[in-house]
Length: 580
Image (cartoon, rainbow, N blue to C red; front, top):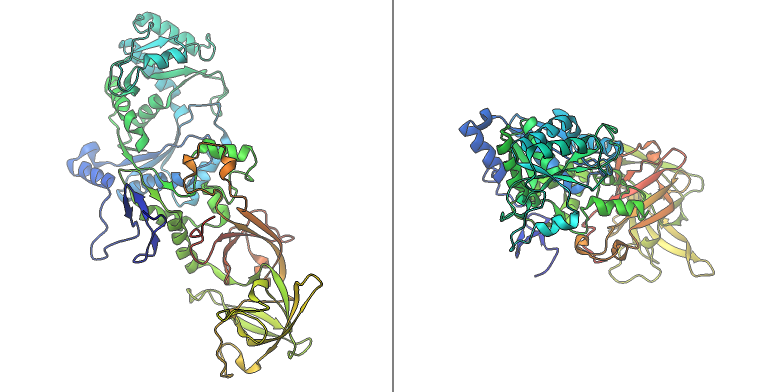
């Protein structure tokens, strides 16, 4: 079956689900938008008075890296449900792995969520509950439901068995409650080295679900924690901290991605055995998108090996990278709404995100002219030293955006690719004897051009038709081409960075080799001497513009009045349709 199909009914890319192509953008406007399966669960719970009809969700990232575009789906879902049902949503950091977690990541996560347009009701950390979680572990030991195991990791893996072969008991499984309490206390007190022993839940080594075969719930890590310092040298495993934290916060609907389905048995077992608040876990399909990597571990490798500038490199699929590139929070929220919430994994074409972005930028971006690869155009019949002020709309999609002034004169910059020495029949730009309109200005006709010794065009000579002025054209001339331009004396210089996809393969997550093998060698082109309108001199960081005929651009964070820098956000049409 063909890939990268486009649904022309709805102007969006189709996602692949099994052997079917799904159009997330299609909506029957004659009906109200249907509920997703999680909303159906919530509305049923409310109707039945479960948790007193209360809805309380949470977004629980681990602060071991920057959030990527995949997290945006979970953010929109959890915060969106809380808003829809007048509930609450907590931000809880799963900070149970001190070796990989940093305050930098905590700060970036909070910034990303706020930028996307959401505010949390409470800010919590799993480390807030270390005392309580430790107490839960002690309670399990006292009930004979947990034991300290000194087996090596290799031996424990063998004890687990296989999906078709039952596991075998650890030789330490039947230790007395008193011995386990003593050993666990000594683990807490720092008497054992990393890896020498763990605390395991005592469940069933023959369970069909291998996760339930006496899972590790505490391990030793002598590492400084970003919040608790060296207070603790033992830390709960995610599966043990997650459900208990949900319960402590009385989360009503704990929403996870599909890979946590096998973990739900342990989630429920802990709640039942500890007799604590009965939070419930539900799973949905994570976001998988073409030409995009969603692994924080692999993204960290790209940063550490300096294949990218940093976590917010505009080629990175991080939320901060998308922000720096010029994406809008509205476009990402719209994208998440279009792809919906499913029970099965599917692959979404990145061009759908691109579509949502262009649709929003078209409405809000101010129009400006820029010339990236300049060649000089001289209007031979225009009076020497004369200039005139022309008027141009800031955004034809917004009647309140107003107009701006453009300076027109004898010498202009145009794009080099807008001139062809030997034009083809269907070439509607500039060439010997050809006529085009200069945007917001006049119709011109090429009369001559100059080349240097290498054959490079250095000057283009044209005549203009004074009676052809835009808005008051009385020339009677008809032309098919329109070109952008800049006045040589007033244009400003700027650096422009053109970005393309970071990976050359549609599914980089499936690549087993070195990531460097699939990095796009031309994912970044830096144009150090482009020309832009003088109106862009006052542009501020994150201001977004449509450069006429070139695409959408935004001001980079490193831009200054001394050196203006613009990042290309996306093209005027589907920029991901071409094959690398």
